[in-house]
Length: 192
Image 1 (cartoon, rainbow, N blue to C red):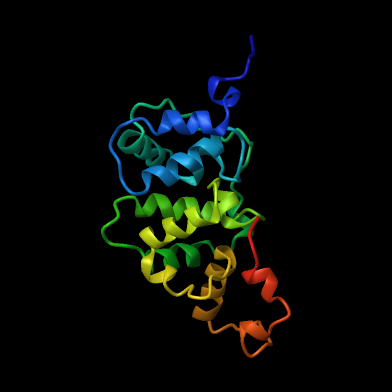
Image 2: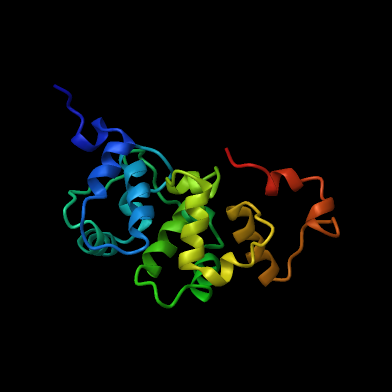
């Protein structure tokens, strides 16, 4: 018999199936179930409590996953080190300024996305989502005014940071437009 807790023995799909059991739903339920499933098997970079405060994590569990016995510690061992993220408050403010006022989970989604921005991979992978399309749908639902600005389908993490730079009047690209920049494939290429 294995000494690993049940959630670590299961595949991401099996954990997702348990989290998708009937219950109180919101449009964010599926995306959070995917992130939690990935997080519980050590994928993504989300730290303990998904990057939420312990009380927020308890509220999330009670509202969206009351049937689940969620661990609170990251299987991956990821820890938040906001000391290397000087832009944390700017990220929070950017997302708050573009938040959908009809979404109850806004503060949770902001905290999770900010934690995901500490990762070094594509944002959808760092969050533990299963595709870039899921991230796009999640951002469109939670932050529609921000998502609509990404009309050229720039990679999301690059796009979010570009928004921060533009808000400060910082334009680091020397090319007159993205289309002629030598880094175009890095910003707009496929995310596999």
